Picture 1 (cartoon, helix red, strand yellow):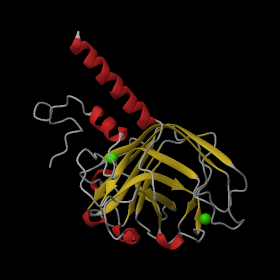
Picture 2 (cartoon, rainbow, N blue to C red; picture 1 turned 60 degrees about the horizontal axis):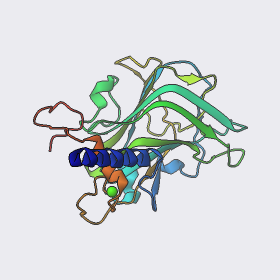
Picture 3 (tube, protein in one colour; picture 1 turned 30 degrees about the horizontal axis):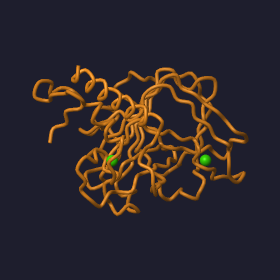
Picture 4 (cartoon, rainbow, N blue to C red; picture 1 turned 180 degrees about the vertical axis):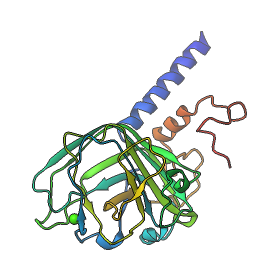
Length: 266
Ligand SMILES: [Ca+2]
Ligand SMILES: [Ca+2]
């Protein structure tokens, strides 16, 4: 009877921890934001996307480690990905994808990226967002741009990125493509050519060069200066989010199931 009660309490706490993480209590205070390319932080990019809905796609783009100098080249948790509307956008805009998957990895790849997607992926590749997505811009900013980065994607799984270990690769694919309308993002032009490969096919293994990259903004958590037992996500505090991470791995035995994605080789 006692063990039944203990099990019930354990399951309740795990459920509470998971629901707590799902409402977005993540990596809060004092985030850092990095715009890539750095040079376009306060400058409208020379390119702009087209309205191309309903087309499956896969896109990879490379963010060089040198773009993260403002973070003193220290490891950070990437918690949000954002883009901004192109100057040609004239009104608020809401865009959806039925299915989209964002992956991030630390890669030794440099520009020009390989046209074979798999060649560019780092060994720590992580699915950081998966599922449907609705993103919105209020189109805030001067007529000629740059607009605010308010097409925001809060990652389901923050990604620990250390610029000392390589460049950051972002890999996005969608089978549905943008439904009805697409965001019309601001794009760089003649900056980081060959840092981006793209194809209108989410299953393709080989892409073509895109001679631009979207201007993006990454939000990163402030690194923790301390070693704290139980701090699973290195945000300098032990709370229910750490418990949720532990609960997600509950009863995994890497000696028995080393192929489990949660079992990362030391
Ligand atoms: Ca533009
Ligand atoms: Ca923590």
